[in-house]
Length: 325
Image (cartoon, rainbow, N blue to C red; front, top):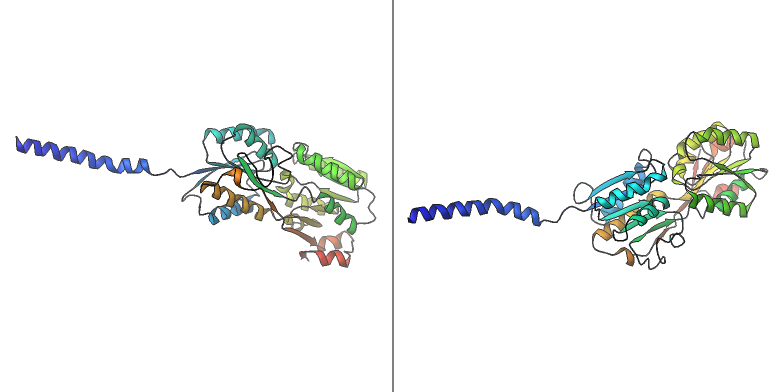
């Protein structure tokens, strides 16, 4: 009888010991998941994603080690964003990093509880995303950069370089009306401009054919993720068609465009990563003030200027942060 009880005790003890590792694993916290929602495509946004990961690392998180990132790309079709945002909510992500205003608005429309960290060039107060910049008050906070506000300055810089131009065109994306309307309003207030629309790559042929017909003296490319994602393609097109043009992103000038003037997007995405990490560490979106990325750079492509027969004024050249020979 004693031997039987002893065998029963050993059997029970062995079963409990086998269960302990499972119980211990069940009590371990799950790896948090961040939803990365963008209106663009991943092909040319590698540097921005890398900058986002860098910001996360500054807050103590590394993708694949102690955090998972679920990427959702709208591929320049903003009407896909609501469904992509809803999918992230169903996935029960811990934070949504929403890059661009359409992405942030789509995320805000489907959740009032999951924290949202946005990156945009529009005013988040005006869009109803936050109560104020200093005290957002809800489930959203993030970073605004200056690229929309800088549109009149781009027009001024282009006019300084091409003072004889009587017609300046503005390229906007009608599928992003928040930014398109602001760009159009600001530039029409600054000067007489002609509006050109493009929301797909197929529209570019029409845009440049129209520029030729108008004998346009220059082109200001609007602040939009669609154009940012195609900055190199637009640089090549403006160089091929001999159009003096200005863009917000440095890669445009590096690809043969005349010049660029705008916010450092990589720095903006890094700051979004920092905020996402801080929220994972327990801070509340409502208490994190909206940041402003104020790092701006002017880049001139002197080779393109010479091809266009333009003489760059010495004062303008002196203000350039980078000159591409």
